[in-house]
Amino acid sequence: AQSVTQLGSHVSVSEGALVLLRCNYSSSVPPYLFWYVQYPNQGLQLLLKYTTGATLVKGINGFEAEFKKSETSFHLTKPSAHMSDAAEYFCAVRGISGDGGYNKLIFGAGTRLAVHP
Amino acid sequence: EAGVAQSPRYKIIEKRQSVAFWCNPISGHATLYWYQQILGQGPKLLIQFQNNGVVDDSQLPKDRFSAERLKGVDSTLKIQPAKLEDSAVYLCASSSSGGATDTQYFGPGTRLTVL
Image 1 (tube, one colour):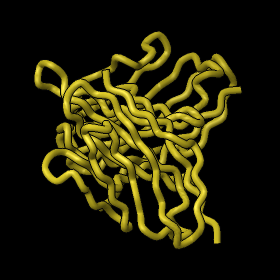
Image 2: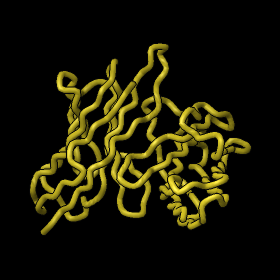
Image 3: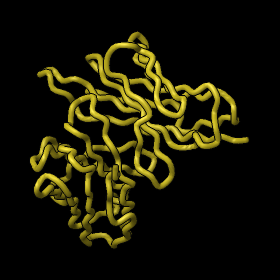
């Protein structure tokens, strides 16, 4: 079964500082990996996703993530934080089942990012 | 393009009462999902529809929850009777075909409080 662990339920950075949100997954086969962002009182919005090919994935708003199979990680980064980045971020995994189908999207518990001046 | 619409946005009920949520997906999207997001947790899939058929309802508490998607468009999720632990945000999402790499587009959610 697939699972997702997000290290740190709360992360606080200064405006202009590096953002690093950690995500580790467990999957018996190479998974599809996603990062979603949720702003207050809004639904989730896709930031980026890894399916196949290049392991460094670029998304919206300057975010990127790198799929590292050896570390079973898919950490999200942004070189310079903006105040508008304050939100909750969810990592999700969708694994491929043995019959060639795919499993449901499994979300981590989320990391709340605070950006202070 | 209009996004996923949900109503109501907020609902407060007493335990043992009934409640229903409505979702209108993005036009043309074949797949519709209902998720439950409990405070401090990530969303958990309750049910997935492909057109008007159920693909996955393995995590739907069927003794109290029901969902339908008439004509493969709008959907309603019902809870009857509600329990305190049903307090959560109920998110509806849709995707074009339900493929493994498809992007799911989420609505703003309905925040349910059960007293």
